[in-house]
Image (cartoon, rainbow, N blue to C red; front, side, top):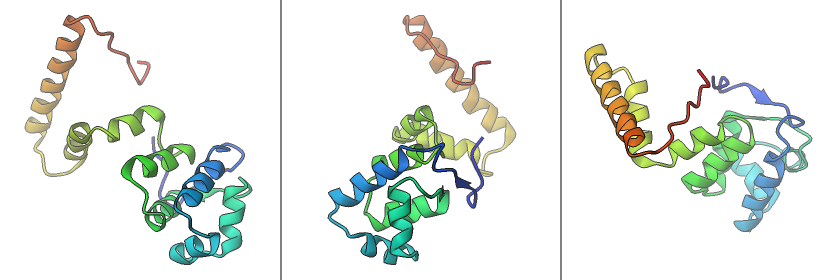
Length: 142
């Protein structure tokens, strides 16, 4: 279950976020002040984030990614480091077709019958992969 947008993650529980943010910022050759200004926060806030002394919200991660011109992969890595995405979900979202199917299924445009039809096709694809000998993990552990 994903956290609400406003919920902040505890830095103690997400120690990878600070170093990931610092690496991305330094790779873009941006100062903390530049990033802070673009995100509407104080430069000391960026310092505390990078030193894992302060938690981060999903909204701020998105602002940071935008301010740093992050690629989709880099943005998802920041989201994962902040604890807003599991590694499995980040990998899925990097697959354009799977991300599109996910967005379609999560939206309100499909009728229940069409949603069920698409889900059946996905199960057929999983059955085909299993028939080819690939193990099909259960990410939910059900």
